[in-house]
Image (cartoon, rainbow, N blue to C red; front, side, top):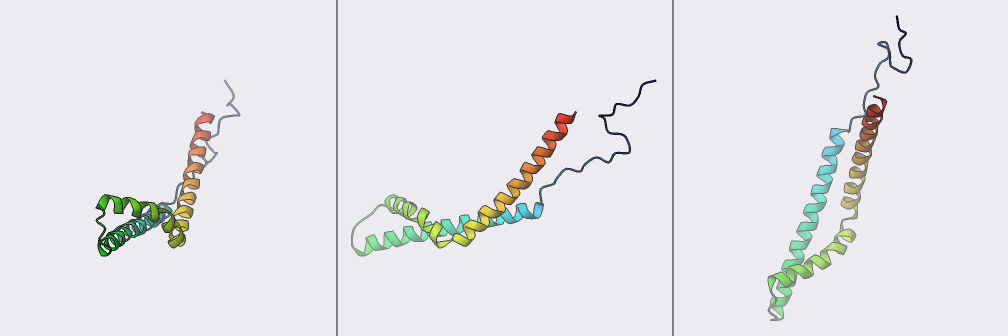
Length: 115
C-alpha cells in the first residue's frame, strides 16, 4: 500500500479560486475609451470645418485633404489639453482592467506550473 504524495492536494484541500476580471470595470473602460475617442473625432471634424471656412473667407482654395491633414496635426496635441479628464479616465480604467487580467494570467500560469 502506498502513502499519498505530500505535494499533492488532498481531497480536503479547497482549490484556490482564480482572480476574475471585473466585467463592470471592462464596461467602464470601454465606455471611457469610446467617449474620449468620439470627443477627439469631433474635435478633428470641427477643426477641419474651421480650416475650410477660413480658407473660403480669405479666398484661398484649399483641398479638403489638406485641411484634414492640418486638422489632424493640430487636433492631436490639442485634444490632450482640452480633454485631460476623459483621457485620464480612459487610461486609469484601462490600467486597472489590465492589472486584473495580468493577475488572472499569473494565476493560470502558476496553476499550470504546479501540474
